[in-house]
Amino acid sequence: MFNDSRYRRNVILLNMNRGFLYGDGFFESISIVNGMAPLLHFHTERIIDAFSIYQMTPSFNINEVLQKSIHEYHTDGILRINFYRDGKGKYLPEMDNVVFDYAFTPISAIFFLPETFNLQSALTNAPRMQGSIGIYPEPKPNVPWMTVKSLSSAYYVFAAKYKQQNGLQYLLIQNSKGEICEELLSNLILQIGDRLIVPRRDCGGVNGATLRYIASNYSLQLTEAIVTFPDVEAATAIYSCKGSTGVSKIK
Image 1 (cartoon, helix red, strand yellow):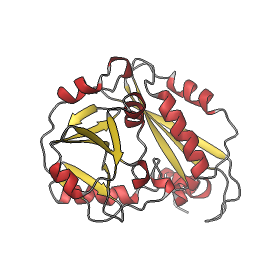
Image 2 (cartoon, rainbow, N blue to C red):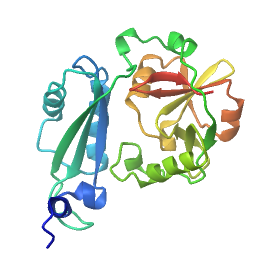
Image 3 (cartoon, rainbow, N blue to C red):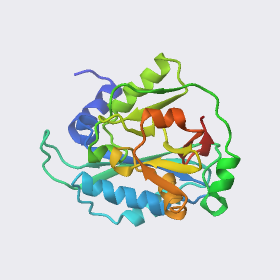
């Protein structure tokens, strides 16, 4: 056996962490602003949905875990919490209990703040992000665990490499039916004529907390619809929507 600390850590991971071994779990990225999580309710909902999708049974109170994790940090940044199935087993797990770990990355960003958000103002004043837009040719599997932030992220890894190799700034993700479901790193809002369109939830995109907040508070102004490449071409504007940057105009 190698007398090397890195090797020893790898042995621990291989023996104990099903998230590392099989991608058997998910993560949640939460924006922290002034020691608070502005969209905590929507993150909590998505975590609970993910437990159901992954058929996991947590033995802890998720609200207590989130509050304790968030209150450790007093600077702005991103809290990432990884949830994965406990125990051993191979593809078939021995149990459905949940374990978790978390890490915090301080960053300076224009975070999405619900208390100051107005949809029309956000669209009108959205910063214009320059760069080319492409569509990833490999369809995203339209399966439930891909609508949360799965630890099985190979699809997004290869999509990111495709974006880099083709000199793209933004990469739209499609499902097997050719429906646009999201941008690589964010949800989408399209303006087509006088309509504001968001891809339908059942198309397979990640159920983003920021877009869920906007949709729940501006439901009369947004229309869920199937979005295809001709819609992208016809759109007079396309907006990127995520917690760490808010609403940005990419077309």
